[in-house]
Length: 161
Ligand code: FES
Ligand code: FES
Image (cartoon, rainbow, N blue to C red; front, side, top):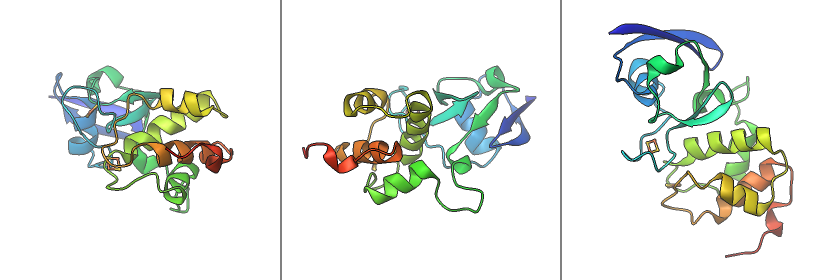
């Protein structure tokens, strides 16, 4: 076991990890940040997406040790300083972009990274950007609306499915 240190949600943290410890297990088991979910064992679902140095990364696909020293952001770091929902989270709530909520942390993290790169995406760009995230509940329509709303666009302009 090695002490692995990184910055998570603006705070320097450290926890013991083995060389094979995945980032998602480090976050959940080592740090108790259980908002990052594990929804598959095939790197397909996107429930585990976090930001590593500003990029959306599936935390089940990297070893904790390989991101030693990095700046990591998880869903726990997405609220406003006063504890209220952050902009993307609020848009998901306002547009009913979740049902069971299991995929939502990954969806929010992917959305935030997408909007950082492309602040006014088209509907097609949103759908493309979310391709790595699976939702088993919503049918995606309201998620796409939420992302468009978070970008300041008229979410209701997209056609009903
Ligand atoms: S748990 Fe990482 S992609 Fe499914
Ligand atoms: S809201 Fe249930 S899996 Fe997406």
